Image 1 (cartoon, rainbow, N blue to C red):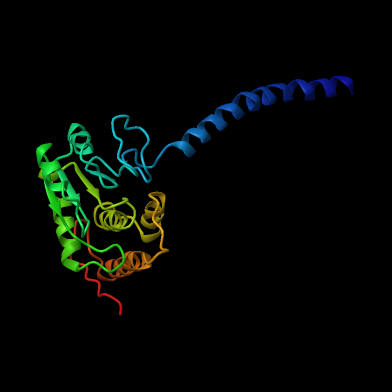
Image 2: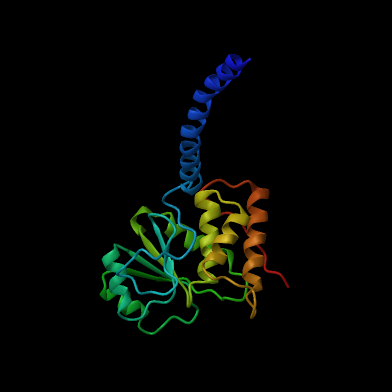
Amino acid sequence: MYRASLKKISNAIPKFKIAAVAAPVLLVATAIYTLAPSNSSVATGPAKTFANITIKNFGQMDDHFYRGAQPNDNEYKELADLGVKVIIDLRDDPMPFAKSAAETAKMRYVNIPMSDKDYPKNETIDEFLKIANEEGSWPFYVHCAGGRHRTGLMGAMYRFNHDGWDYNKAYQEMKNYDFYTRWGHGEIKKYVDDYWQNFQTKNTGPHSASVSVKATS
């Protein structure tokens, strides 16, 4: 009886050893898989790794697309040093120095004016996507006043058309860049939702600017 019991114990030891070794390895592997991003070029919130950039709410969405708040007069050079070729200013009240500061820093300046409280025109979306899809414009920097609402809307348009994201993922990214609907900004969220619904209905492909959204009354 004692020999039988000892045999059972001795047979069990290797299994315990294997389990003891395998468990930490499994935990490490699981942790690596969990922490690894699905696409290393995608950032879904403001970046904290650009030591030479002082622009508020600054972030990089991919290799082509930087975004953030209104740069001050001196911060355009920071963008030029980063390699930015085109400034896309979404403000309907652009700063007086914006165009000259961008051009002094050897960057192309494009103003696509839009409201931060109303539906944009379809032509506005088309113009933005056209520039965003031009290789000669890469990389570009998109901004409004705070980099939240108009920039967030255009970021969602880019995600739908360029990256194939769905509404929930795109809207979460908007919130990561401090988007909010209070103080009259709810129409921006409604537009993004309406655009996504039309985008799905028309089954448009990547890099398409053919989705039309009518303003609500």
